[in-house]
Amino acid sequence: MNFRGIEVSKHICFENNYSGFNSIMEKIEEIKSKNNFLSVIVGMEPTGHYWKTFATFLHNNGVKVVQVNPYHTKKAKELDDNSQTKSDKKDALVIAKLIKDGRYSTIYFPEGEYANLRNLSNTRLEVSRLLNICKNRIHACVDEYFPEFETVFKSFIKGKVALHILKRIPFPTDILELTLKEIILIIREAAKKSVGKKKAEELIRAAKVVLTPKSWTNLI
Image 1 (cartoon, rainbow, N blue to C red):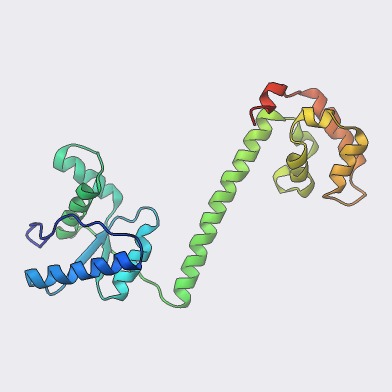
Image 2: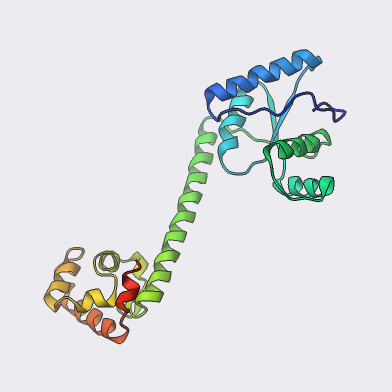
């Protein structure tokens, strides 16, 4: 789309790899030559992760890359046709119109150590998010199938022994099927010999308080 809002190219598809990126660069040069453009701006909606590599490739090849707010894209579609339906062709056109009107922000491309720090920071945030999801799922399962477990192990999500028990004998029925000695041996797989009998006895008492129906455990 040129500065007058006139489309200068049809919808283009390409693969998210080096070959696909090169095909887009060739198309950009073709459009510039055909329309006597001195430069072009490529706009993106920063959702997901696919845009990052492509944006970096364009930036490294001297193409100005900008981003539009996904919320603005959504609202612009509603104003154009009173519809929130999505399609690649429709979204590309809306993004082009927003860029033509100057409704975009520039993208910062860090280099060297700054790029490494950003990547490490983003990776840490993502790992922390996934870790919290896993912790919440474990808590939910324990609350549903063995709520008395937390009377034996406080803050069990951080405990090596507690997590080992949940891995080996997670249900009250599992615990009651074993002898005291067998439970002690399981505990000592993850702990020192000084820990064992007392916790095993507490586990058995807790398991007797709330029995998980076998029909439930069969669903896991």
